[in-house]
Amino acid sequence: MLAGLFFVIGLAMLLVGADWLVRTASHAAAHLRITPLVIGLTVVAFGTSAPELAVTLRAAFTEHAADIALGNIVGSNIANILLVLGASAAIAPITVQSALLRFHVPAMIAASLLVAIMALNGHFGAVNGSLLLFALVLYLLLTLRRGDRDLVAAEPPPERPFGWVAAAGLLSGILLLGAGAYILVEAAVVLARLLGVSELVIGLTVVAVGTAAPELATSLIAALRGERQIALANIIGSNLFNLLAVLGCAALLAPGGLPVAKPALLFDIPVMVATALICLPLFWRGMRISQREGLLLLGGYAAYLVILIAAPFPFAT
Image 1 (cartoon, rainbow, N blue to C red):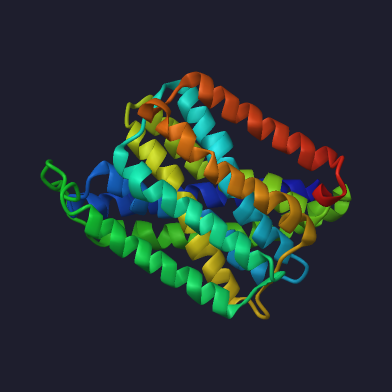
Image 2: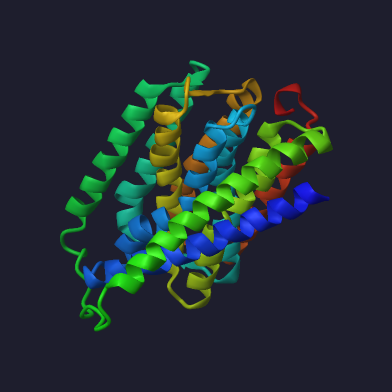
């Protein structure tokens, strides 16, 4: 099936582009001597969310693909908590730093609730997009302000300079993301029609998991290497970036804004909010996420997919 082949090609281009982007951005951050926690919350998180940004913006400008745009954001945030965090914790328990509980997790919950309230209008317009982008700037400023004691890493910056080669890698990553997003969205629309399912379901499942692959790969590798703070911070930062930057840009730039499908409003967005809310008691309990809790999160994601695909309820179709 050509649509499936092009979908895989587009996804591969997204992953390679995101990898180049993250590597280059991380190298630049190292020169600024930023700690792993802040790198995970900002540079790594925003870099691994670049596929969501590329796909969402492409879908927002594609006829009949607006549901893919919103489904990609909501589905990626659900997958980040239940799938990515669950898989990372299942590998090894993750210790939670108090800074995440005091500020960053509440910020993610607040952003999720803000988006849910905005969605009640049935439409994300330019005003909504502007407010979300303003919230992103405010979050970044507060993150840097709060991190003034831990912002500077103890290690000296790397000797290798951030030069033309690194800049070329950054540009190549951006170009690959754009091309991959174009191919993936077009193929996803064709697949949805061939399979007889809605673009929203495709966006919430196949596209969302595909664009969340960089977060999954980054967090799993970080967990295996013992850099568990980067793994956890990457997930929290990615969810914030998806809601504030990706949705904000799409709502602001898309012609006519982004409509909110009723199934997303009644089922998927509440699930997204619930997964954000569950992080507070989950992280607070013992200030760690155990392997058992990681497996429970994975089970929750499997249950969500079963409900979504089987659609036993009218609002989940």
